[in-house]
Length: 78
Image (cartoon, rainbow, N blue to C red):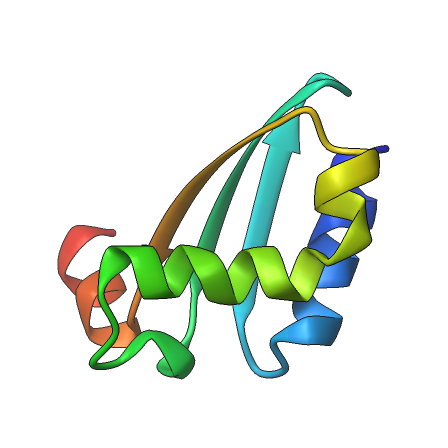
């Protein structure tokens, strides 16, 4: 699986999110900015992303590091 495929799956599962994915084909890092994360704990945010990835997370992605931000948090760190 390639980074662009992962990006597309997350964007489809979480409409309106800003998604950037980088990786080497086995290990990936995703930065996701979404209004969906407002009021959610880190664990809840990660579960939302894993749900969006569905079967790909179980079958095709071996390692995925997530960084999840609300738009307000993202504005403060970028």
